Length: 419
Picture 1 (cartoon, helix red, strand yellow):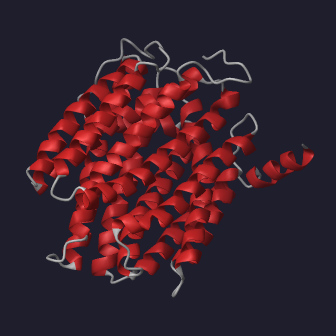
Picture 2 (picture 1 turned 30 degrees about the vertical axis):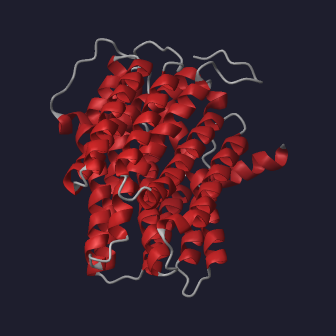
Picture 3 (picture 1 turned 90 degrees about the horizontal axis):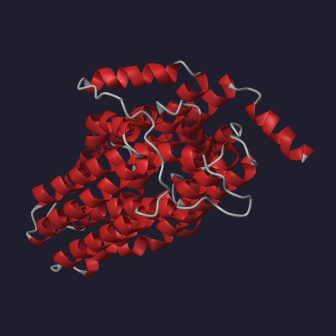
């Protein structure tokens, strides 16, 4: 446990934050570097474009479904710092492979690189989230997660924009995009060396080759703790909505506003700013503890914003405002849930729990990619109506929290007014 002072963050905290930011940025830059040229192609039908975007997202998610238990085992069996350093070494090799795939203009190899980055993130996530309660006291866990989520989603948004910018600016010279991402991976490796050293949670933990049996065991661990179990499903709902919004936003901006990938900067910035403010605000409003009342408040904002996003004839300025509100609600929603997932497991099971939570979150991500394709192609929903689906999911998630924790919001408000 950290012995940080009230005026400083623990040693190595910012190294962890930058390493995470770099990984989130590079993951998404590579993914959208591959996707955006396909979306801009005049030789492909809208159906083919939507299917390709969906398949690329699914390929990134598949490793989480297959290997999350391995990531959880690694995070418990070895020092989480050592796991993250090893993962960053692997990222350099993956980006070199991606450089070749881009240089050869091979879509199958580019999709393979996306899948490999999914494996990279699968192993990184349990160590990243599991180390937080080991380097931060519980009084700073929500604030620390606010910073972590801020940097993660800013990395996602900026990586998405950078992927489009690189695809357009370096068209025909994609090898330089790959080399740039390789260099960023090397920087991430350097910063990972500064992450705080922590002991292994369970050095004698044996690996269970029955992947689905291990997932079931980890689920049972979470189900024995009511708050942990609920936070897990809330986390899954969040990633479903976030992914559906991200995929739909790129298609909506292109088809409705006729914006090129690089012209979407204002919309991406609005969402990024909202997430950043929401995450930081959640840490601030939690005031030294995990504040459950923020979850339904965030869900309500997400629901209203998604309803607004899909409103017929909405102009770009109003659309950008709705994206900002969506991000604000998302930040308030996710920070308390992540804090619960980190704080409540025992030291010996933190990695396993994070692995199981990661597995379910990527079930949500894969489901979102499939849902986007089915709603757009089979159900013939407009892009605006797909945003309304996001609103409905947020309503269900928020309503569940209100029903199961009816005192969460009143107690939060009472605490705020007393102070």
